Length: 194
Image (tube, rainbow, N blue to C red; front, side, top):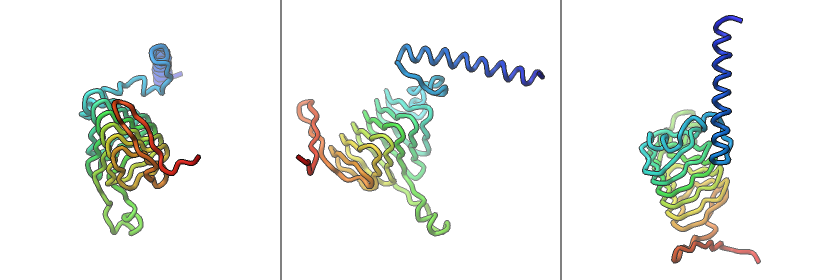
């Protein structure tokens, strides 16, 4: 075995030991088993680096492009895409952006269909305060989601959603409203079946 292979093998062994120690510590503290990169990097530090507001956090494996603003105490889950490359992408305070969510400020549909003769279409996208975006949902360019709204899992949101709405589907439609009264929260779904 040459020196280069031995050095590589030694480094590999050290990384495995580090992973096992970090994995054990995280399991004991938080009852979680995470990928190696998530054990190495701090979600709150990443949010600070992105100049997010206090208490925000974002997973290391989240992709962030362009002009993105994250409000205080907002949680950006794993495997998300926050694409502010076509305009400002603003996420309010106390938002929960679930795993796999993709939020865009541009699209290349007409560019592709025209063989590159048309420009990308762009538009500011915003998520109001106190919103929940369900797993694997996609928010298109130019969409505004009003405060205190819920977007159901696997929804495709291509039109703006009013505040205190429940929306779901592909394309997403408003299917109910959020009622907040004296710190109590209830959900009123339209067209309930008995």
